[in-house]
Image 1 (cartoon, rainbow, N blue to C red):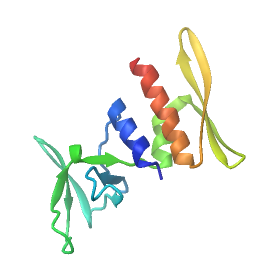
Image 2: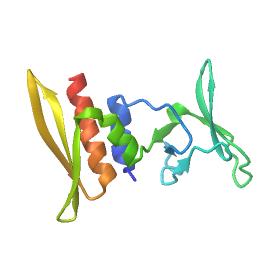
Image 3: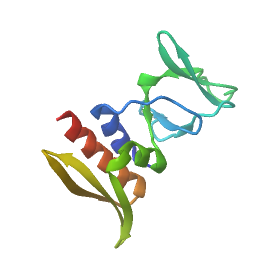
Length: 139
């Protein structure tokens, strides 16, 4: 799973989340940051209102959390979601000497540039590549 620090960096860089079933997230509060929640119609449901989206906790009797706003959460995208967000820039994922390496081809000037991002976890390698792509796109 993508690290919380990288997930926060992606959020701060402008990555937006439209909650869907199966998505994972953390609540951005010190006492809950280590917990990872999953969107599921049975337990955590995304509810969209004109004022914004909230994540409602259904049937949580063990603690008093009814809902949180999207702004109080940090999306923890899965590998497949990160790969999809990289789109056509993604070339391949390799494992080499205990690290995963994401190879991508980003637009650069009038051409393209081959880039590589490595991490111990594949999701973090994808996340680092996406963070790089966002930075280049907004820079």
